[in-house]
Image (cartoon, rainbow, N blue to C red):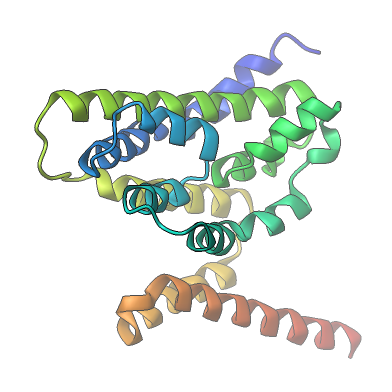
Amino acid sequence: MSPRKPPRVVAMSAPIGLAFIPLGMALGFLVVHAGLAWWWAPVFAAVIYAGSLEFLMVHLAATAAPIATVALTTFVVNSRHVFYALSFPLDRVRGRAAKAYSTYTLSDEAFAVGVSPAARTWTTRPILLMQLLFHLLWVTGATLGGLVGEALPIERLVGLDFALTALFIVLGIDAFRQRPDRWTAAIAAMCGIGAWLVVPGQMLACAFAAFTAALMVRMLVRRRTERA
């Protein structure tokens, strides 16, 4: 493998991965404020490693939610990963242990980097290095947040709650730059704004549903046009 590969992987992953520090810290603060010991933050980050699900899991763990509730929540929140697996380059990862770890650490951010044009020649080592970097940064951020939250009487999180939204905005902009599609971006914006105006309490779920339906209609129209 070329010696330039690892630095290139780090250079591509670091800008996104560094956002994991404030996100992980927010998780650590939330763990401590929920009444759990600080060390639960790195445990959640390392074992669950599912982004938004971890924030929900803190509340479920703190309130001793039933296993059925935890299982259903996990299924609903992480069901999108099924579609990620359809295009993520897992076929370029060699070895059972490597494939298992790559599957386990398949996050939104890892998917965005892994399917980018710049990563189309990546094989086992660069793909795993990218995912390991994200995993370690997430655990590091959560550990820092747990320790700081335990040491300082922080009553309210200001700004950190927007970190996840900001990260996905950056991912969306980067994806548009790689594959510019104005129609898809316009449809997504209209679905988001429409859901915010009509059903603000369920904006995310309704926007996703409307966006999926719009894409399916667009695909059917395109197929009919190509056959005509």
